[in-house]
Length: 387
Length: 237
Image (tube, rainbow over all chains, first blue to last red; front, top):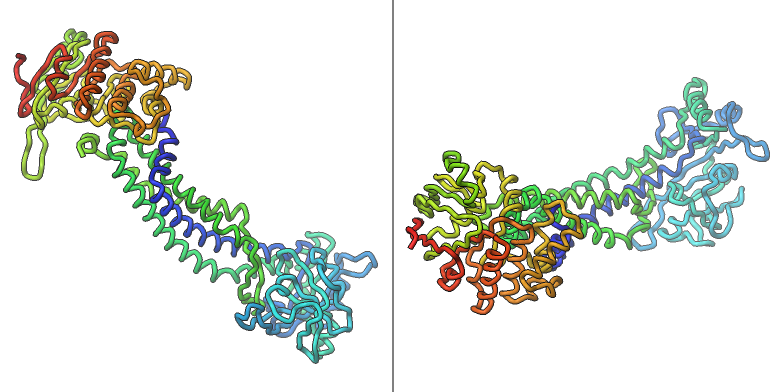
């Protein structure tokens, strides 16, 4: 049997000051790591939950974004409507939605400046194809009217987005008539309006994109290939889920900077843990020698001190998780390089993020504790008793 | 160092057989001879006091008997074993099974209770929790501290701490009890209590006791007293 765990727990309690300071140091590093991971999880969540495996997004050939110049002509739209495998609604109409994207500038509510915001123009069938998007206040826009509905996140973060407010673009003021909640999807970064009204305002004859819902995921793949392979159309079909998954790359700068900061802080925390554990070993040299004389082996001593360091880092991890809890679900935004507008998303402390944070802290504890534990196990018994 | 040269028949009654044991410490450019050609035999059931001034090599010899220090030259058999052939892990196991060690400064683990301190050597055995509990309580009763099981060392007097340390040393029923200045940090009353316990363990439980001391009163409890001076064992008086 090994040295009892209570020995390590009580020693950590005995050296309260050093334990708390070291655990706090680890906690700060864990906090940064959780913050970055929660941001990325939120961003991934936003884009990953947007796509539907049965839905095909059609863009102009060579285009990778709905925002790119050119698009899908009305003639091409007619051809698309006649393709086999398109799902139909209860009225027997094909579930296909021609849509336009526009980027406008809106001031943030907190006064931190103006930011690009995406407006999506679509027909009522487009709403029907997105059943996860729910109206939570007001009403949907009326076709043929300069009316928009805004997402909950946009409403919370930007000025002029309350019910009854107006936003100027196209040929006039557009009135906010409703607020929708799209869960945590990418549509949380959007304002929606009527496609025909904006086509008239901007004299647009083309769609930025066309969304087609197939009867099933396998048909969606076939439909996507058929659109891309048809030489007459000069269009590119892709699964909607793939299109949004690609946009998670907008988190890459956060990921890079966050990882660098977290690694630097982790190295610092490793040294803090190492320092604390070296002090513990020096302070308990006589105890360690006594344990060795009683009969505990070097591996037992090594394991005991590594375990103590892991306990210390676990304390730090728990403190870090508690420190981050108030930020869980906080809405923030980042620049989306695909749409050149702000991608709004929430920090998500998922079980995966929390587990990763605990493992991250344990790695710090392991590296910080290994050298002092090795030193403890190798120390000279006679010398330790004499000192 | 040569292997065992002591005849096997002699090892049956001799717990310790040291022949020409020397220990040289190197300090920078200097060599200090802590033990100089020491030859000593300790019989089973003996109570031996090792006396001598500071630096005479008493503790060094005791540490060698406990397999926590190695001689530079000479032969040393303890319980018939050439303990210096053991690996580090084997030495630890051997000490756990055969040696009880009592320190001058008690060396109890401050964060563990008296019970937990005494239980430590038993954690390395295959005894069940209940068996360990029984052994610990027996040992604590033997030193008169069965009512202090949940006390931390800081809640005990020096004499009580040393009695807990003795309970820890005897809980696994070792053959050989080694005590390094066990009364050095105690008042005379506590010292007498501790010496009485050691004597009782020797007489009633037939433990072989080797006690380092420079207190003549403590040495008077032993059957045999040997003196060390400048690393050399003086002839018996």
